[in-house]
Each structure stands twice: as structure tokens, then as C-alpha cells.
Image 1: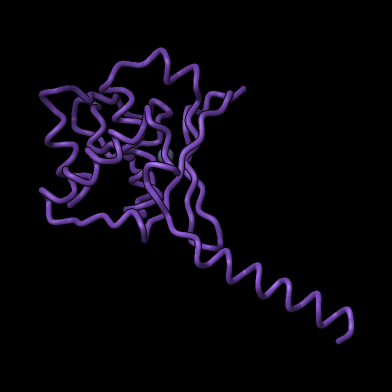
Image 2 (image 1 turned 90 degrees about the vertical axis):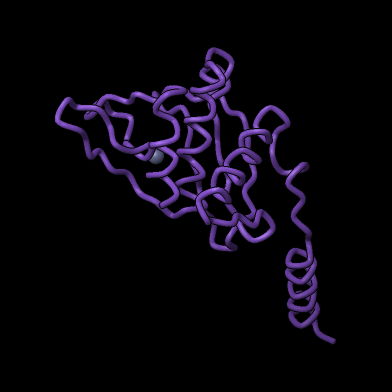
Length: 154
Ligand SMILES: [Zn+2]
């Protein structure tokens, strides 16, 4: 067996090992964030949208972002997704703000939604999926949450 063939074989084996990795939600998602994933799946279920985490393969990572970006979700060519969350923002945020951020990022990676800055006549954002650039005013509260989640999943 020549070296090139051996090398190819190793790559093949490595790739197969990679493919057989099982996704475990508890291992891939930070324990401070996992509750929001579970809540996202429950809210989706209530609105007729089942979330299969083994299929979505989303992991999370806390980062120190130097920019204004408080979170993002990246999708890789192998179908896995990574949500980066700015640790400083996270630590300073209320439960509702954390939920908004995680639901927004899952909106990108799991629901494949892009940004919309659609607004009411008073300038309030109609969607969790607004760009966060203050084009419309976000009004995510306990009283508006249900309407925002209806819009997110439906
Ligand atoms: Zn976004």
C-alpha cells in the first residue's frame, strides 16, 4: 500500500468517525443556556413545530465580543450550528433578554429565518427576528411574549 492510499484511508476513517458522533444536547449546550433551548422546543411544540435537536445539532459557546454583536449563529457545511453568546451581555441580562437572544439565534439556525424589521404604526418591531439595529423598537415583555412567539414559529 503506498502512502497516498494510506493517507486517503485515514481520512475516510476519520470522516466516518466524525459522522458517527452522536449529538447530546446536554454536552453541546452550556448549562446556563440549555433551559432556553428546552423552552424554545416547548413553545415550538405548542405551535405545531417539532424541534429535533439530534437533527439540528446546535451547540453554544460564550465569547468575549469586542463589537456590538451580542450573539450570532453560524451554520457549517456539515450541518452543525454554533451559537456564540457574548458573556458580558449575558451576565448583565434579565431572564427575558436572555430568552429573546437565544430564541432569535435559534430562529436563524433552526427555523431558518432571516431578519425582518417590520413594525407597527407606532414603530414597535413585529418580530423577534428584527436586526437589533434600532430600526424598530423591540417590546419583548411577559405581556407581548405570546404574540412574538406566535410570529416566530408560525
Ligand atoms: Zn439575527
